[in-house]
Image (cartoon, rainbow, N blue to C red; front, side, top):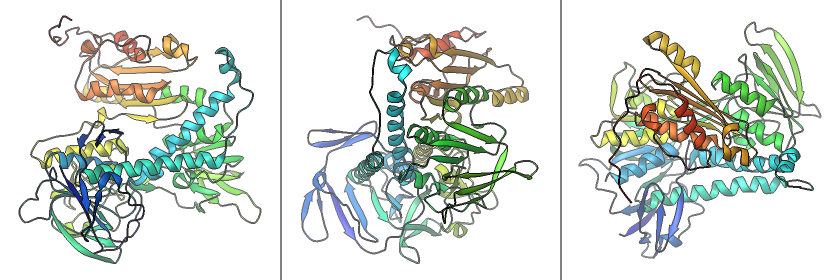
Length: 572
């Protein structure tokens, strides 16, 4: 198989807001680049508009020229449908756009992806990837600082410390590496990467290029919006990027404040509290709702507070809004004016060294030209059907236009965006596919981690009351797991919510060592429609953390013990 790269300068570069991304894992084999869990393609050669050629695997494009079009035509990237430049055009090269693009090429669709910022979007450049690098550091620091834990293992460490700039470089270098891997994966499979901002100009037509100079028009049989989101900053908060900042700025780790206020105690706020307290900061949470971590199952949230908040240098104010935040200047600290979330009466004033705004994310959908296809956003989100089809102002499906990821607001997670993108490609290829969002897992990478899939207990009880069925709860502790005890990490809980009459899994919630890895057995079971009667026959290696879920499933009491017949045994 051969591939070629051509470069043109028909349009200009313009940065736009970040997009969500999740990179594929990469490994190398002799003579080819292999993309784990995706597909493998042998690299051939590339040629420029001038008649020079070089091997793709030896080519690095560090600084793309404004308006550059990168074309890596591979035989697997099929010819477009008659009358169109492409079968599929994707606006946004985040994890959703990337996942959709690679799946489209696998299905033989001629595919292009438009990106006006950098490949990888939010997840790779300002989110999932660099934050996990910082959390890896905070995890090591916690291990080295926990004398009681080390003593129990028979270890002694004289002292622990860190180099702030080296930690920041680790996060930045990881993001750069994954960004390059992501770009190469698309180029090697023949996805055309079009640099610039994409805008709808009519039915199945998009222009791209620098803002105000989008002079390149292309047509596509199908178009996917995958423009992601940006940090949401409430009114009254002044962001200066140094003393009052969002997660985008925090990942640069330019300094470690002695006292940091974190506005919001969801995933983002909780993870950054883990990082900053490990590096020496004192943290104060400011939460609008009446409890910390309101997005988690209440029982898991209470346990998380006992393990992740109370023992650390963290205090909190709940049921309050940060009405106004003024950055530090002229020798004065950051000033935070708090008001009661219900009465709106003044509550308190905080003076801190810095404030991190972790109040969620807002869809990035402005300037897409959606009015040209009669689409009106709802609080910025693009309205979609269960099949991710974009709906117009009258609620009707806009033919051949889809929206995935943070921009539609169904589930603002990078891997959900990728799953939605793959689902859309299946539909484009004539195979109906509806993603079950209750099977999509979520994780918070604190130490220890938190993960869940499906419904929380209150949600399940509400659903049961409305639909007239019963639910049951089963729990297991990490203190009963051999591997967790060997690691001296017995703090943790796994919780199962299920229907006792049918064995249907409604939700699983885990707090404990490697919870983010353990959750996938439960999420895959939900996705595949497996019942508890069947899962209890699964075999787990001993001693492993996976036995936490093994014990959890086996502890469930199901009235109907009828199991699906197992495959015929094979003698070995």
